Amino acid sequence: RGVGKYRSTEHNIDMFALARMLGEQDLQARAGNFVSRMYSFNPGSPQTYATGTAGKSECDASKDWGSPVAADTQFWNLLADADPDPSRKRTSLQLVLRPSSEGGLLTEDEDILGDRARLLGVRFTTAGSGAQWENTASAVMGIGFYDAIYGDEGATVSTDFAGMRDSLLHQLVEYRSVLASVRGGNYDAYEHGNPDPAFPGGSDTGLGWAYLRYPHLAATAWTGLMLLEANPFALPDGGLPTSVVDESCPASR
Image (tube, rainbow, N blue to C red; front, side, top):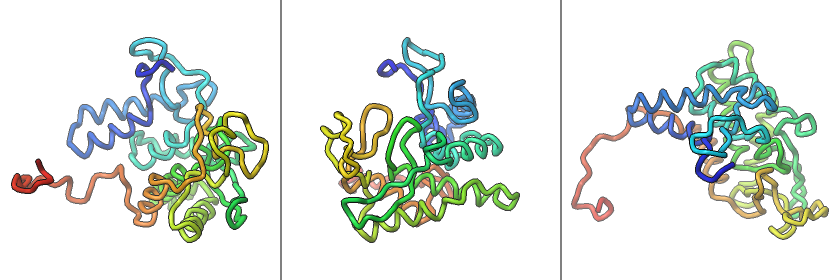
């Protein structure tokens, strides 16, 4: 992808939610339209939401044929409800929630350097390896959100919801945080493809970088949101605050 030239599905999901919060209906509609058009956009990954467009030129609207399926474009779309079509969301989830051996995102890591627990999560993309726990927490939230709306229609999309949630809670107990990856090894190990299962160099995103075995702010924050059942893409109850900022407060200057 050309730097700064591609259009990202994840970023349009973010903009859809922000525009809704701010009452920017035109911007919300345009961002939502982009996300909807990303469904089956890449012929190599039909019935899922593409990562975005290619970026070879300004305003490149062509297909990025080599792009893998990313977790966030599937699960964050659920939470933001950027594409309102439930059948398309259900189909994408059914495909990405298959085991990694079948081309899906589900994967199990053994915490070899910890208590050797076997933890169920999702890969960052279909080209990656190893669970990435920020996306796993958002996956649990997205599945729960979908099932809360459509589950009474017999449309439960995954039986692995509890296993992923328990894996996140296990890390909170074990480490008082959630890690980016439970797989050991440094960046040098990642770049050289270390075959040692205890030190492979973290979880490979499949996009040219890895998440290493460290306490991870975003993964921990998403797990907290999961426990609070607080959807970060939803419009707050009562809308956004409209009170005038107290200019005498130092924080407002």
